[in-house]
Picture 1 (cartoon, rainbow, N blue to C red):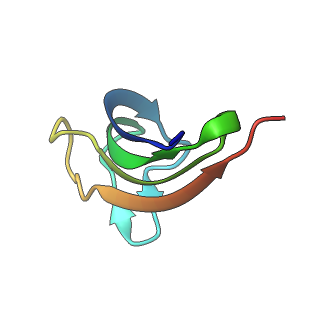
Picture 2 (cartoon, rainbow, N blue to C red):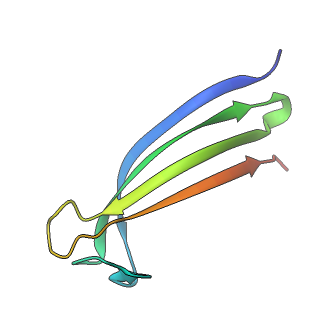
Length: 78
């Protein structure tokens, strides 16, 4: 039918307002973001998926603990 699976991936840069997130420490506010996800797109523009994101400074400055986040998402057009 009108259900289409998708896969997404991306690499980018980010700037954090703090160099510590909970117990994870970053050597600088400048970090890289790696993202991968997959999901389903439905007729009418609706979408449901899961995404994993990793942030770290790639060892540019110590410490470089890195942090991961995982998200389920639902998208609905207006």
